[in-house]
Image 1: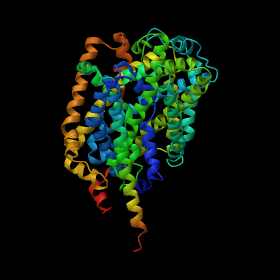
Image 2 (image 1 turned 90 degrees about the horizontal axis):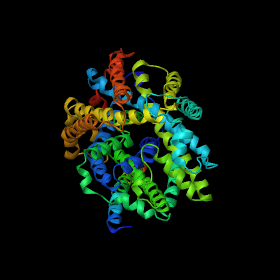
Image 3 (image 1 turned 45 degrees about the vertical axis):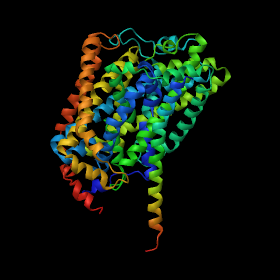
Image 4 (image 1 turned 180 degrees about the horizontal axis):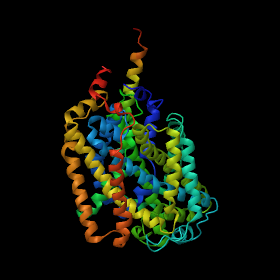
Length: 42
Length: 509
């Protein structure tokens, strides 16, 4: 593959995959926090 | 709150909704449409307007639709009517768009079902291009010349509509939620398998070079921008009423913004990954035939049904297995999107007229089958091409503009922003606000003007004026006509419109 194509492939695939990972991470962290709060004794 | 509102069906889990939303977004738009739009618009050059379209229009509008559904807990027409009864018609436009889409979607799934059967024997022969247009579709030379009925496509249509009836006439959690939990992971695995094989073929790099080498001069062509906006809307199921309907089945304290990001980026990541496989196979075919990648096939909507069979032929025994796996996943992908479109079309009728779910489904599935039979004629692919172009380039873009304008200037953007952020773990800020206020309406209006100008100057696809008038403008006129009729009919329970979203939201605090 040509160098320019490789660079654009990394950018093109990198944008959605990175942002998806960040969004999923945020979701899991939030869900975990909610679950922990629910488990705390009143 | 009325009894009906409180008994609105719900997704059993957040995962169930997320899978359904991703299932709607991930579908034929990614496997069938995205690769051919990409191929027709110069490969790498298309990716720049594509990403710009996602961030400037598709994601902001997806957030708007999730907010409308979750907070107003209604399908598109009811959600708009609850804010202002005079705006009900704005919600019927995407509803009618979803009807047009399900009618032609059913025929593409029917093709995929047929090709799934053919893949066991590589029944498309040595020339998949000739087989597709000739032996399989019996394609005529004009959209106005219907030719004879293709019984194989017709049987596929029966399977699609009957399958939809049996799955979806049940409740949300037993129907759509269950279907997606099985089909989506299966689809992801099968596609991944095809992609890995595609990019490891001899000559695949030639195709990947075309996919990822941008030609900045091509960005001057307005048609690429129009294609990019149409594609992201189609692919993300924006302005079709689906996301409003789906999110209306969520609890009102559900997260809106982050869910939109997850759906949007999952969809984008998926279609780009699929393209790796498609362009890898195109590169392989180009190398085998000794021609440039951009002249391997004529392109167009038959890409998936020509390129892949040709590649499976060239792969030997492995092609048999991959062919079966690929067309099975194409059927699954189409079906998840089809189910969501049907749901988006049916829910407004249940909301407005109080029809029983099972009865509406039986009427829609029988009527849908009868109307979609036109796509089983020899002119089917030509009609589909014209309808797809007009509905995506005009109706969906128009519905997107309306949604943005109504939210920005009738709902009042600040109030809407507060509503969006009220239960979201990630908040939207000024960028989203200005996107809805200015960027979305201006950019999409510009797209519409460009589309109209291009259509009048260059026509479309070599079709004659009567063909474009009958199936292109004719479809748009019908969408508008039914929108007006349905919005004028009385509500079975007018009390459903009495809904104070802010008061409702306060109950959460």
